Image (tube, rainbow, N blue to C red):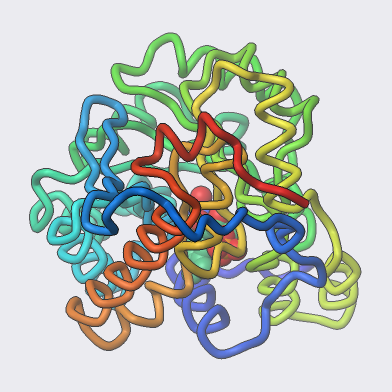
Length: 343
Ligand SMILES: Cc1cc2nc3c(=O)[nH]c(=O)nc-3n(C[C@H](O)[C@H](O)[C@H](O)COP(=O)(O)O)c2cc1C
């Protein structure tokens, strides 16, 4: 029998391994295949570039999401506080990590709730694994996750490969679409479906759109590989080798965005998976996304201070403004409409 770690131990492992080990996917995001056309006479002032947008009735000052990462351990609570303070100061969105730990042990609630306490105005996303809908969770647990942090929407993450390569993973993904559809119908806030780093195919995008999700976060391959993370946590050689097999797995981020755009053209798309800077986020938006999600960049900054996270986000914004300016556009709508990328 393979040994199973408790949830809080697992979350602590995830933070440590992501910061200390090389857990990059063996493939790239695909964004490097695209380039903007440089405009030497852009006919606008850099200071006129506007990164603002409205999403789920909240105004964002930039199309940036701090993707779901953590909560459920004392250290995670501090990290969440810094990430949320920085999101509030810079006007961007934040997703908390899976709230399963706090649903099962209320003593962990403060490590998630802190986000809303310090960031009353931000667009904030709750998070649960969709597969838990096959392990006893239903609308009550989803609503509790939302209420816990007064979330504006719920992210249901899809991670079949991560569950399959870890000891004791929850691998029954049968019939989940119907259950996701049920949550979409009953929950009071929008539902976002999200991968965790292996991307979205056309078939999955269509299935999710038919379930009625409000947005799809592609979390494509090219950044963090969760099979590599699980490889570093593996309790035995069998599990280690199983996880190591999948270093190159998945659909890259650029192709995933295009898959969703094709199969579910009306759906809001979040880009994430290996986004390194504001140029990558701008490319993702030009391909069809509404915003870009980032992880380890801000996670490592949060280990230092809130100020460091604010500085990191400031750099992302400047990189995006400079891109939009020198590509000859004024705002995100122009960037998206003109589809200015060339291969
Ligand atoms: C430390 C850490 C913890 C994470 N925990 C969660 C989680 O609880 N729920 C979730 O949906 N995604 C989680 N993720 C996945 C990210 O949100 C993201 O989808 C994935 O890492 C791919 O993006 P990246 O390549 O930019 O890291 C986590 C990522 C990191 C780095």
